[in-house]
Image (cartoon, rainbow, N blue to C red; front, top):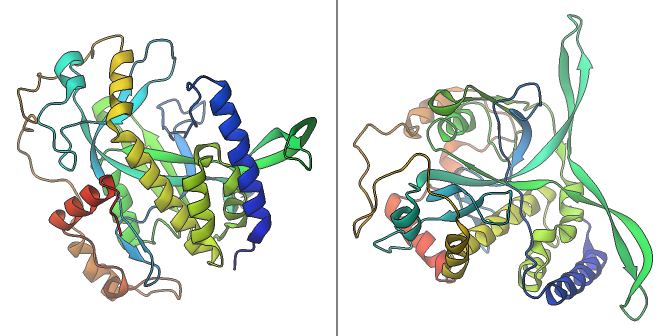
Length: 362
């Protein structure tokens, strides 16, 4: 069981206070940052490969009578919007995404950036430990949550900042925003044939570029990940330094197993991302700072979302894997297909997303 009691609450309260002071001193320009996990095509830099544990299950998962973790949403995504005064592109959900329901997407209308169907997931990065086998090949023999070190100023008994500093660590968590086709299909195939992606440490490697991009998913079911560093240090994640989000998470994970706590953390982070990326004020701010049109111009929207050219769906049909699961030997930690939370239908998913955006999610 997780053991983060009142000490985590105290640390979280101190972090909230420090964040609010930063926000007040920045004239409203300071924003918590949440990283996006990218794969590039440069093998030499190592950026084409990531070791991850997903905190978002592919389908909705019931943890208890009080809490159901939602599955992966598919959104209409603007992933690379150049911003004046920033070297980093912005990301936002198109206004023509069905749960938002607006007839025109201003970014596509003016700047010709065509939004793409995209799956959104939360993942924590892992640090593998390697050992050479008899053939001289390095193979992972252990996986640990990847941590980032930083320093922060210590407060005195009155809560005022001093010049003393303390060393802290924070888990490296990020958003994975990828195509449901060349990326999502690979995850779905692995999840229902080899092991659940929220229980199995993975190595995901990108090969190729452009339309020739493919992803290879390799799992390590025999390696267990100690999630304590994730759960016990989540109160130091800058993106959560907002009283509502942080206090809610600390309350929800108290007394939960580390596995359930990690899934709740991922679920609340994904909710926060969806809230932010569908907020009209956030959208308008990003729209104002776009400083160049798309190099790959799509047709302008004409009062309604542009229809896509018809083609067969490449999404994995989950039913095709049921026979595999029925006939494959299962280990103790596996969830039989019939006992997993029933996936939401398309209409149920749409209503669930609309409810999230309206702040009425169960």
